[in-house]
Amino acid sequence: MDVDAFVLAHQASWKRLDQLVKRRRHLSGPEVDELVDLYQRVSTHLSTVRSVSTDSLLVGRLSALVARSRSAVTGAHAPLRSEFVRFWTVSFPVVAYRAWRWWLATGVLFLAVAVLIAVWVAGNPEVRSALGTPDELDQLVNNDFASYYSEHPAASFALRVWTNNSWVAAQCIAFAVLLGIPIPGVLFQNAANLGVAAGLMADAGKLDILFGLLTPHGLLELTAVFLAGAAGMRLGWTVIAPGDRPRSQAMAEQGRAVVSVAVGLVVVLLISGLIEALVTPSGLPTAIRVGIGVLAEALFLAYVMHFGRRAVRAGETGDLADAPDLVPTG
Image (cartoon, rainbow, N blue to C red; front, side):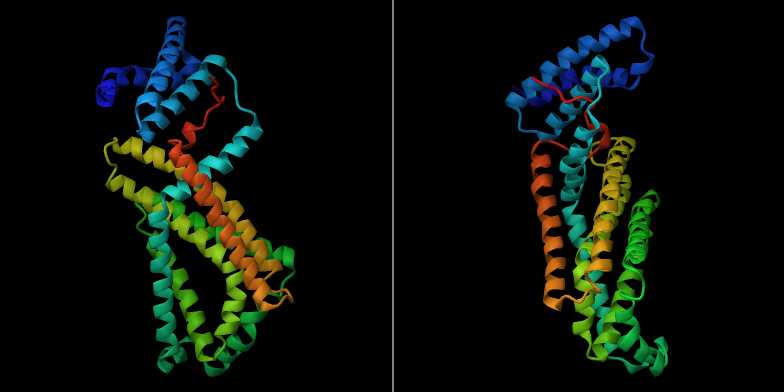
């Protein structure tokens, strides 16, 4: 079967069904009959496409349309538990997985900037003197840096860390409406702060303390920030290069997918904040604290790879509009 010809022959019916589903609360009697008839026909189209085509995007598109049509016809909704499971096994990981190139590039550039600034600060006494007096820098590297993680009660510190990190991630996503242009600035500011701290600690011979305190929570925290920045910039790029879709459709689809990232990162950053409040300042040996951070990072990456790859193979995009109100059964 010629899939392109099949799409051309039936896409008008798919578009009409989508219109009826969106207006399902305001349909006339004949339109309700039309909705039911189109739902049955498009369900057949989906079965045909699944049997002859390897186009995962087309299968995913029709699967979502059939699922939403079924919910409009039956008036049923998926249980809250099913929606919760779908979010964590499909919506969030598939968006993270599909953005891995943006995600990786963001992380590499961030760390490169941080390293360059650290080398610059550590190797230039003039730069360090511009950052503070010798007494102020001595206080920072010998007392303030380490005491920052233990001077507040764990619960309040975790909440403050979570709020701050969530704000950075939220900025990255919110700036997508400005084509993502401000996002590199937000990331650069955070990379510069990290680079300055690393440079000062390196000059004082305390890099082991720096990494011992940052690694337990920093791996997961920075990964979340990289993902937020990548998702926001990718949404901005969609405006410039929407591909073969109308720009408004591409933006809407990618925007809804980014919402999944925003919600998912709330939990990821909460976990990072708990590690920073409970593990980083603890009396555990440095190797164990670092090991906990590495384990948390490895589990998160494995989670995204496993569920994200599986969702991509199933034709999922992470668009929240694709989430079925009722899971179709054969």
